[in-house]
Image (cartoon, rainbow, N blue to C red; front, side):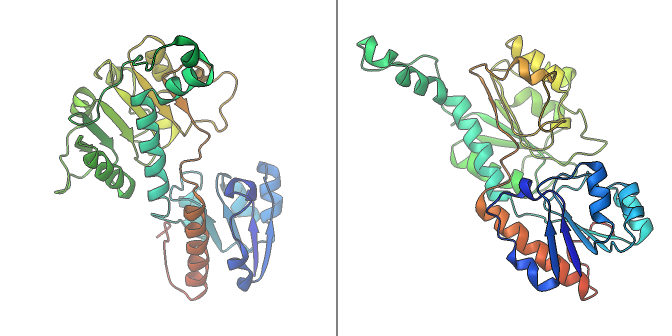
Length: 316
C-alpha cells in the first residue's frame, strides 16, 4: 500500500507520522499545487490531506486511489459526492481539536476583553515607567461575569467553550440547528441581539455561508466581541471589516479566512493593525496534543478501512 501526504507542512513538522509506517510506503510532500496534487496522487492507494482540494479531476486520474483521509474534522475541501460515486472512501477525524480550539477561543476573548496587549504595550514601550503613575486603567475593561456569551454551533467545541464561559460567570446562549436540553437555545437573531460575546464554531455549509452579514451585524450590541473559530466564509468578511472600522464591533478575533492565507486585497488587511483586532494564522486547531491525536485516529481510520469497517467514514 502506498500512502501519499500531499501537504505535510500544514500538519506541523513535529507531528509524529511513524504510526503510518506499518501500512506500507509513506511519501510526503510539504505542499502540492493542484497540478502536483493530481500527479502525485496517481499511484497512491491512500492520500492524506489537510487543506488540499480533492476534486473530481484528481480522483478520476488516480486509478489506485481507495481512501482519502483528511487531517481535520471539516471536509468541505473534498468532493464527497464524487468520491461516493467512484467508490473512494473518505474519512475525517472528529473531536480531536476540541481542547485546542477551546483554548484559542477563550484566549482570544480574554485578550480582547481585557485589552491585554494594549496594557502590555504600555509597559514595553517605557510609557509606564515614564508616567510616574503606579497604575493605568485605560482602556477601560469589564468583567465577563454577568455578561451573555452567545455560541453559534454547539457541538463538541461549542459545549467546551460554553463550560469555560459559565466558569467565568457568563450566561451562555446557543444557536444550534436542533435544540438541545443542556443549553439555552435561541434563534440567531436573538443571539446577535442579546450577546456581549459571540464565538462561532459551526461547520461551513449552504446554510452557514455568510450567516454573519450586514443585517445580523446591525443587530449586535456596539460593545460586542465577535470571535470566529469556524470557517472564514461563515462571515461576510467585508461587512465585518466595515463594522470594525465604523466602531460597531468593540473587539474582533479570527483564526480562519475564506482565502488562506488571506491576500493583500482582503478586507482584513484594513483592520489587522487595530488594537481591538486579533487575527491568528489558522492555528487554533493545532496544539501538539491535538495533532498527535489526529494522526493516531487517521491510522485507526486506515486500519479500519483495510479490515472492511467504516470508522469515521463521511461518504456513507
